Amino acid sequence: MRYKIDEIVQLIMDYRGKTPKKLGMNWTESQKDIIALSAKNIKDNKIVNIDKSHYGSELLYKHWMKDGDIEPGDILMTSEAPLGEVYLVSKPIKAILSQRLFLLRFNKKIVNPWYMYAFMNSQSFKNQLLLRATGTTVVGIKQKDLRKIEVELPNIELQNKIGSIFQFLDKKIHINGRINDNLVV
Image (cartoon, rainbow, N blue to C red; front, side, top):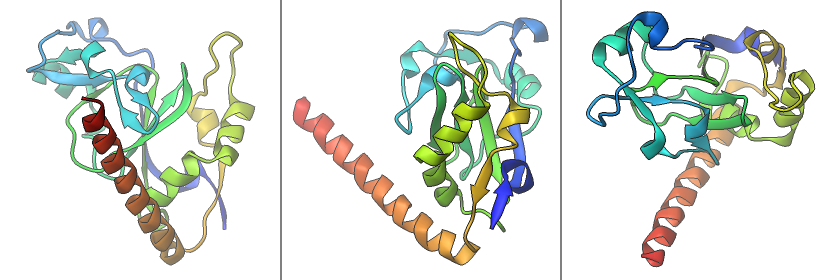
């Protein structure tokens, strides 16, 4: 069945334009504080460049993350620079969602997160993003346009089967990546 993202999403967190200064606070550089994730931290389905991140206090976190915490099954997607990089949250993570990053939480009665993650990595999804994107130098998508993207969803049982295959493959890819990293050292 064909759905628009707006019809199957429970929550989209989008803190475009939000800054600590607007809340009367500042970023910290202490890695003991809570990491702030932005578009520069999502690449090739991984969280990267942690060493280049800002951090925020518990107070900043509470004021910033008004829509709740990041949960397993949520998908983080860059809204620009670069557009359309995705990361599936597989275990709890406490972070502040910073600039140019959407969090999408889908209705799990209709959508298997692993199936949606695989779809969001597909050329079909990337093409729809580009068709709705704006900008010349930096291409990006607004939340209202993201909500209009169409998704073809099989029944949830089939999504669960397909999703479990992608989850298994993703795990193998990460294990192989760690093995390769150890060989380099």
